[in-house]
Image (tube, rainbow, N blue to C red):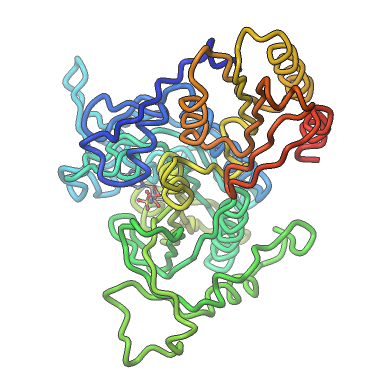
Length: 441
Ligand code: 5CA
């Protein structure tokens, strides 16, 4: 992408209404614009990142055997009356009347809708297990939307719903998602900590939250340092056909606690092995038996011909929240530092002297090289001061910067800078091209 063709409104000024780094940087780096409280438009740069995160989530869900579908954002109130949650949800639910005065709502989650679909179309134990997911916008009329996309009112969630014949099978479905979540966050370059959690309005008695650690996290957490050193299960080392209980036991065998649970005097972990941090909840999984299947009539005929209500679980990932959470855990004073797995562009090409024949020609060649391999590159071809171009490239956080200027070229080199470390190397142009051509191999 040529910067001159792109829509990337960046700014040097810290927006007054943004309290935390990720929110400030998302506005300054031109990722989002607020349209009303807790509701955002995703500009082209922000959308690129959102799509990358979505793609990683989708790939890991698919690998675990979950099936993607797409349910609507607007749901009927009647469905929620069946489960009893229409009244329970209170003011957090956005209620809408259609032209026939039918009561509708903007879905805050989808347990009712998916259970209704399954109740209508799955009738035999032979059709189980099933895990169905979608990646869809949700609306929750949060009392205090804040921190930009981290606690929005409209937000993008991946939500999966498992249906099984009995509790043991339902537990296996839960375990699969647990492992898929460990892999999903690792694939984004993140370290996520699973913690036993409350179930709140979703219900059930088995639940885990996945937190990523960052100073501005909403919850204070304590955990055994050893948990942070665990490597997530890699392909080949496990199979989704196994019950995976030993993997889960390994991950949940460490001490973790939230602020209110933690008692320093009674803590089993010695102080020097205890991590005290703050966390951002990026995922939450639940197992709740027949809480929805019973009232919504989701049952199958079992092997002996009797009716059996389905055992269910639901599994959420905050896709739009992750954009903020990743920035929160990966930035510096100059701007965002994207992990390459989710970066909107892998390379930023800076032409220090637009109009100089040699600079223009080499930049065009480097740009073409990246394009030939479908590697995302942002070419800053604007006639701007060098300082402004560097500041912008640091702000938007592209992993590698390639700087082409007349002085370097006279001696035959260009500069390659790693955003994360700031390490600079002077290299021959052909080496840059080779680096691009072998990038990610
Ligand atoms: N039905 C269940 C699982 S599918 C559910 O709704 N779980 S949840 O309430 O925990 O939400 C799932 C994830 O969505 C959370 O872990 C969080 O990452 C994200 N999320 C929840 N509320 C918001 C919000 N207001 N803004 C941004 N992300 C949110």
